[in-house]
Image (tube, rainbow, N blue to C red):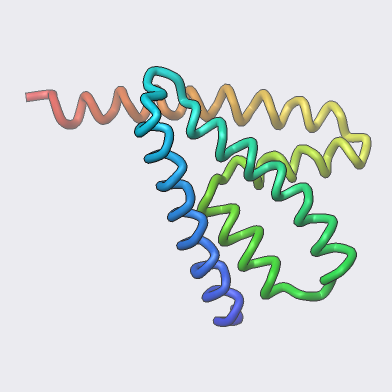
Length: 130
């Protein structure tokens, strides 16, 4: 492991998480309650930025793992992990692996929601069993 790559991801992650917080605060300030609008906004923004960054990093800055870790792994990872999911599915689609892409989408959504539900049930059982 190279420490500069780790530190680049950490620094980018701090800024991404900070932006995620600010977007959430803005949506709360605007009274967008009841719908996950802030989460949707950062997920869509993260995917959009990831798409552009892939082109930029692959064509203009290939061989620059420090910038990739800073921007893709760190910043977009801190802003949203959904951007990584979007990139992976897009890569499958570009490789004409439509079936695998569809299974990936379904698995992430179904398993993700099921995992939240199971974690919620376990948490309730652990904290409220007495």
